[in-house]
Image (cartoon, rainbow, N blue to C red; front, side, top):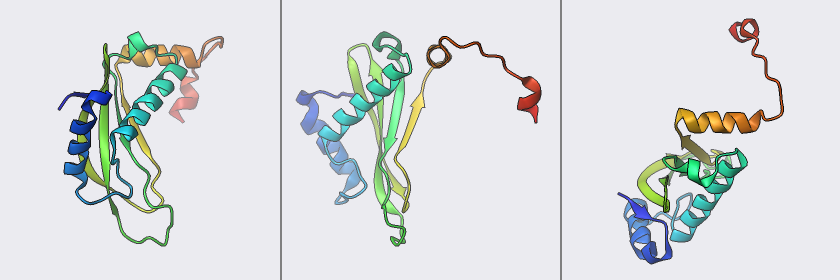
Length: 140
């Protein structure tokens, strides 16, 4: 599956979400507009970590919504996990799977990036600092 996240593909994306979700609407990703929000969130998150749009190509980000907020809710609930991948022309939906979430589960965001992209983010996080790794402290 590879569907560009664009208004022209809203019907196709909504149909794919309905197929995975069935009748479930709580704790699931139900609409094209949700994917637009996730793509925008991914873009902001990566930019905040120093990874510009050019360097985002090849990154994939998976999202799973939060579970029920009440601990009194006793059962796992049906949910959706979507995977978005960054290409030169924008974000694409590259995966939708059904999953479950439990009460008080937080939203999950999984990022898959290359070592080069990780190095860019690492450099941005520690920009202007002198970093000295204490191997002895890490071994303890």
